[in-house]
Image (cartoon, rainbow, N blue to C red):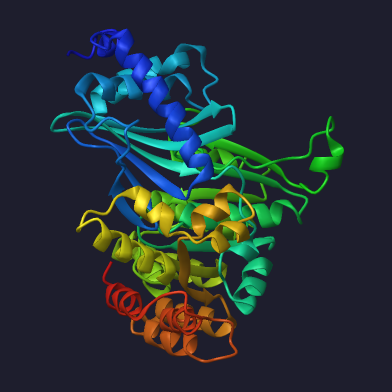
Amino acid sequence: MDNDSKPSDFFYDVTEDDSKKASELFDWLSYKFIEHPYTDLHFNVSKPIYGRVGGMILPILDPKVPHKISYTLSKALFRELLIRRSGVVDDADKGGELFTRRFMQERSGNFACAYSVDKGEVRFRVNAHFDQHGVGLSLRVLPDSIPPLKSLGFTEETYRIINQRAVGKTGLIILVGPVNSGKSTTMASFINEGNQKMIRKVLTLESPIEYIYKTFDPADPENTMSYRSLVIQREIGVDCVSFTNGLKEALRQDAQAILVGELLSEEEAHMALMAALTGHLVFCTVHATSAIDALSRIASFFPPDRRTAAVATLSRVLSCVCFQMLLPTAIVKEGATKAMKASGGILAAEDVERAHSEEQKAKAAGNSESRMASRCLAYEFLDGTPEVLRSISQWAETGDSNKMIQIESEMSIDGKGHCPFPRSLRRLQDEGKIDDQTFRFALETFKGI
């Protein structure tokens, strides 16, 4: 299909029956995802529907779900989601026409959508893409509320320091971790913590917008009085062209705190450092294998002739770095193992659902916490203490990246506020939250992700 074709032509072969099946399927799945601990959905042509639950991607085997997704049903599902796409204020893109045209050119795209049923509303982050058989869809279920920072699984000491950094006035807060490690949730909790304690303007640059932050509503002061910040959310590709352009504009929009998403280039890293240096609190993510590796990763964005200046700036603005993983809990793994044995070796998503004990469900205060009940947080935390910043400054002065070894030694000292990853793992093991196998797996893959 050429690029001049009308976007609607993409769906020319979708029948009314396909559309009806897509709508009924989402109705059923939405009920499931309001009540059960799934985090992701995967639709691919000629394959069954898969769901991520308990950290495992498993087929959903149910009489109400198709055994395999057909080519036209995948397109009907895509259109069903586009109709409910969130945050579109441009009339030219209502129904996703501009998005579909761009999707046909780029062969993939991201957006967020909301699906309403009688029991409530489910929000998804959607990645649409082509694969060998047709359109594939990967959906991340977005919790209906932002979990409190204190509920994520940090120790009291780490929570206290993170809380101080999240409500700070300036600095650079870096979050790192593998895919599906809960970075978006943690970042949202960071920002929401400040939202309830600081009078400031917060600007987020997201691709796409995931969590919705509340602000004060004069029409409902009783329920919104606790939200003190003005939070403005902008979606890349919808509300602004790129992270770089959005960040440049943010400096002219009187924002005190800025979420810039993942740093992927020298220009983005430079803008984030400059924003922190000029008195903003900047939140970002970096693809790295540990808290210390995140510092080296930022330095690597810059060519040798500009790297020294960038590292020097980093030594002045770093607030903290947090690396995290989400690990399957021992209880869920035990239940899944029993279910696999009982079924003769085939494990389905429904088996892991049943592996959740009634006690866990009773403790889950809300939809977001029930999904988190199957996994627990392992993390590494590096605070921007004077000793850490001094080591980074010495790295800038000498060009000797071995100064990172000093930071690693500093991190291992108790009472400094840091938390090495092995220490976090041991705590989870001692508390019985993870088994020995998970402990060894996490330790072996750490820094090798």
